[in-house]
Image 1: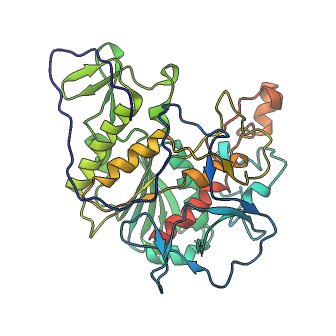
Image 2: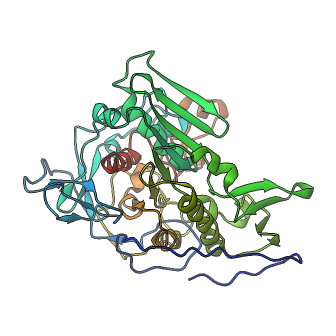
Image 3: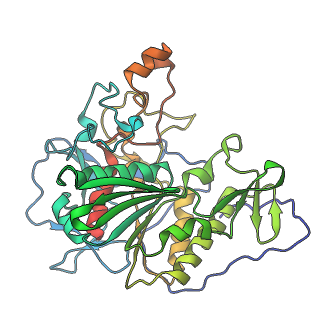
Length: 406
């Protein structure tokens, strides 16, 4: 897969953790391309498209519900499997399900309030071939989550998804019966009448990043408890981790890797990613009870900002399809790690479907017009955010899928 790591070892040893486990079935994977660069360009493909004029789904379609650990969905009334990774974006005037005035949204994702002139990017829903993603029903969701904790764990893209989920839910809760609390790197939205919480825990690498001597930043690939202590006693855990592992050296958050007592100055990013995810997998296997906790791993969210390809600025509709299939290496790695786990982790693959949505990013509409005026900056002079997602927008569809898993 990835090239061997080059190292500057200190005179100690390290242990590679080996997890032996039962294989669970995952969605199909093909055409892996070895690349540590994380981005989407015009080399992707999916057997998918869009139809702005399509109205109701065909009456023969079935809604999707999660089956046991297969990464697929099937009908509750039949055994028909439905691969939700294969489908098309369908224009739907009844969307979005909330607006950018939701009080829990950060400024950077409120693209309409920040001056984005078009709004069609909010009105696309995902239609898998042969089935439908159920429309998000806030009251039904809260009913399922009564006296339960849902926690989304990861980076700023997962924070993006957390804000989406909170906004999908909060509109049906009376004023005064909802609040947000904070605990270290975690925050929680409380629906008081349901004794339910929707939480976000900041852990972009899952494993621990610490300061060493001389202000060295050390990424400990086999240490996780500092982050994982927040994941205990949660009913539904949703993880992601990819973006931070693929930053260029100039943007890297660490100076050294460490495994056991051995320190490395250099390591292939995907080798490091595999080691870090294996530590996460071992913690899940050893510490969680599948009869009490359900675990989802969401695959990487694509970003449309490769320097040698198109960007997301001024894009107004989804791509109809991609000409070539390309599976980013982080997706290959996470599927291999999850496949070896004993614990039944559900893999939510949103990468290919989201790769079609170059129109869904904030681009230059990540700051308010007032801020632009203060800085006297023109649109063309602003940096373009092609990683995060406008809200309402694409993460709402991820959450509709997530709700069906519950």
